[in-house]
Length: 77
Image 1 (tube, one colour):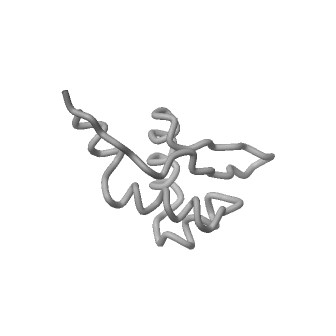
Image 2 (spheres, rainbow, N blue to C red):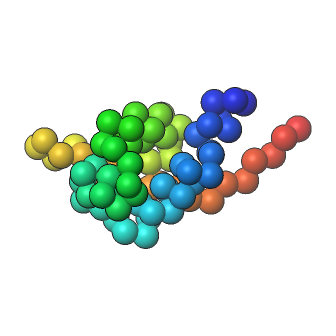
């Protein structure tokens, strides 16, 4: 549960919305748009990819992030 809360933090949800809205072609472009460093983004997006929230498409030496989910419903039973 703690990991899910970290993945769905406000900052990470804002990052997903930014990716969906701007459709950056590279991690460097996303870093410039978000004000975050590429290594930080890379770590965060790899974790999100593991949860199926983003897709990271590698082309040559660049990686393109794509938001797969931007709205969430959490049901606690």
